[in-house]
Every structure is written in C-alpha cells, then in structure tokens.
Length: 82
Image (tube, rainbow, N blue to C red):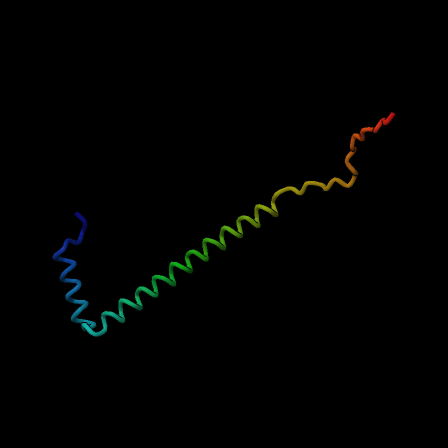
C-alpha cells in the first residue's frame, strides 16, 4: 500500500476542516477546480504551440523543390479524320 492509508487521509481531512471551516470548503474546492482547469488549458496551449513551432521549423528546413517553369511536354494525338 502507499504511504498514506485511510486513517491518515481522514486525519488530513479533519485538519483541513478545522483550519478552513465547513463554510469555506465549497469555495476552496471551487477555486481549486478552476485553478486545475486553467493549468490544464495552459499546458495544452503550450503543447499546441510546441507542435506548431516544430511543424513550422520542419517546413522551413525542408528543401524547396524548384517549380517546373518549362511546360510539360504533352504527347498530342493527331486526329486523322478521313
């Protein structure tokens, strides 16, 4: 089992209840949830920025293929109508 068992968690919960009071616990939980949501959103944005930067770097590093300025030779079929 981990470092904390049920008795330890109950004691920690009781200490938190005594420190903050029952009236402030819902507000504390709400602010904790909002903080976690903001943190998660910022982490996702950082990952997206990294992916975008890597893609842009890969596009810039790729050798450019020369455009075909010369018209492609097309084999024209001659219509021989009799």
